[in-house]
Length: 372
Ligand code: NAD
Ligand code: DAU
Image 1: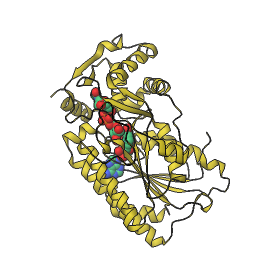
Image 2 (image 1 turned 90 degrees about the horizontal axis):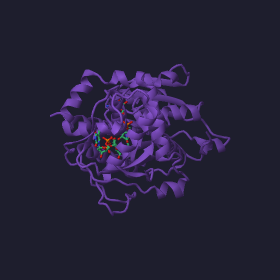
Image 3 (image 1 turned 45 degrees about the vertical axis):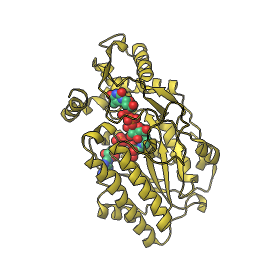
Image 4 (image 1 turned 30 degrees about the vertical axis):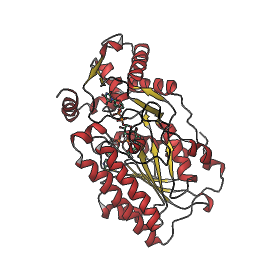
């Protein structure tokens, strides 16, 4: 796979701290990065919450320039030690509590990790930059280090059917404890650039899908439920719209932002793939019928059941990625048809990855959301 930096033959290896690297997007990013930049140092910091899975990174653990550290982003002393000992120049900050339904059940953890955790990392990075009194040049010296904050389109709130898609200047209007905590962290990141001159960049991305996504999210939940013959619970009337992006295209976007993004800027990332939930679920059912030989219930769509809506459920998200496309040259490479087919095939062939995640804790969570 070629990318921006391979065209530059004087590239100096980076030293990355990837928070949340054992989660869905973080682990895809770490695999992507190690494949494309094998000379870079990659240190993963992850607390291994219910959503973190070290097995996902097993293939990388033997590499000499890869390190996994189990720890919390709220632990300032640990963050200080890692930044300094590993001479980090690039923080890719994915760690978060990320599921809206869990934020409705228990918002405290979201404020702690998403707001306090991000604040802790920013303070550690600020001190790190001051102590070094420089940020090591990378990419042949044309750019220094960066604190990349990976955020969400949910900070912009909900769109009506005919509203234009979110741009980088859309006012923030978060509606769930999850999106409010992400909005809070975005504001801190912005302020640390404005006040202290830290080289921070924020990305706001739409719904991701692909391999290694925890079973609680819409697409893996539907795939796994179909495979075990459980109902496919569609919230409300199923007419809510999301803009879907294959996870590797998100990683490619973060690559160009890390290498060529401008500190202090925000970049929106989206797939330009708006789909109603019910249509998405029907497409997944068709793929399941086609690809899975031993489905317990067939046609799979017989399992679709409309359930009580999510409180405060945002109606529509849509992202305008023109800035990223025109300024940094990124475009998504995977169509939604192709991406969904790959994803369904992945869940079909990776039962060993997801089956252990259907734990007693997960069943208890499931009952709270879907049965009460
Ligand atoms: P995820 O829930 O799959 O993974 C989160 C990871 O963070 C896990 O490995 C978890 O163990 C770790 N973590 C949680 N709390 C931590 C703490 N206090 N200290 C250290 N590690 C901790 O999440 P994801 O879907 O991969 O999302 C990653 C980031 O991308 C999040 O910041 C999320 O807001 C953002 N995002 C997600 C999507 C999406 O569709 N999933 C879209 C846009 C943006
Ligand atoms: O937009 C980006 C966001 O996308 C990220 O910031 C979040 O971390 C990520 O979880 C995701 O949020 P959503 O709430 O949009 O994703 P989720 O997969 O939970 O739900 C997608 C849509 O499907 C949403 O409209 C709710 C609906 N849904 C979800 C589940 C889990 C159902 O109808 N039934 C379900 O069982």
